[in-house]
Length: 444
Image (cartoon, rainbow, N blue to C red; front, side):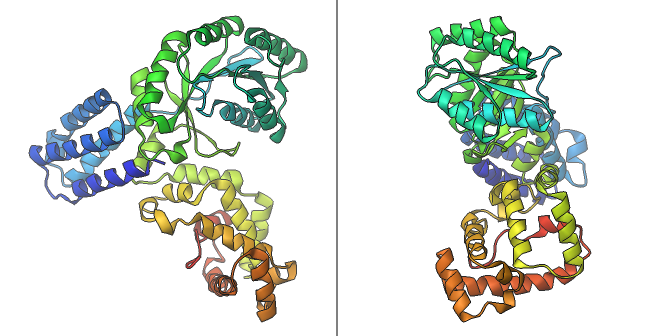
């Protein structure tokens, strides 16, 4: 996420921190570099101008120029202004006091709207709610089938009347939800390839007929200023309450994220990074600003660890670590938990000082796939007792995993090294252990 933006900001920030003394001239030079970085990231030009003006005004203050660490002071100002630009604080989704609480999801076709509806249903259910998804997009081919498939995969029901009139569908969905005790009604409305007057009128009619507690505009983060322009039109017609930025795992520049809140005045409420239905995160401006400036995001990382670590399994692992009985089977279980946390590049980006050092080959997703295949091709006895794996067993494991004997040898050798590390880590808590598991084995 935002790889280009992070790397370019890193260059500017290192120059600032490295200066023992700042003057108005070299502050102005730094501001020109930051302006260039933001414009190249496809941030709205007016947003960039206002941002630079605010930072420069604060940076040339006496308390900065006469500070012992002026570079650090300017970095702090940039951070504070980034947080303010992104929205200052997290704004939770509003569900209202009337049941069912209706959440209306709108946006352009292809923005990831239908997938987000499934993710939001999953999010609500984790909070203890009883959601119902509503298939109100009767125009896009297979839109209803897509939502029904998503609902089935997460065991959340979908209300559908086929290709009936959308307003009729949502009205009957409300009545159905009240009758059967659903407290969250999430409407998947029709998307569009471009702003279409007929469909806009339909969205306004839906809004007026069911009075949603919240209207969320879904924007494809990869489309930059196009997403911002679309948001402005939807805002004028629907006055939505919040924004969802999707596909941020493919957004290297970050233009939409850094522009859309300033232009619309509406908070970003959720971001998504990936297609899995549990990959939905509430938006925290301070955490995103920290990641953009290469400071990591430890809070989100810890939350992901707490969410994915199985407590019972973690306790068993702790006991094994104390007894120094860590096996390949245990390592395989840890790989599965790491995978549930997200991609390696996402995890690395949350660790302060690590994200920018672990780009490219260092964060090799295929390494874990290969390791997982090798361990999966072993018998239970071999996983628990790697020392019994002789030459013939290694050939069988290599053939079964689609790898080479050399790959198997390398894994076994490096696992032996890892077991030695366990002696040093035996007193460490299971959560700390999970965060210290190597993100890939050398040579894979």
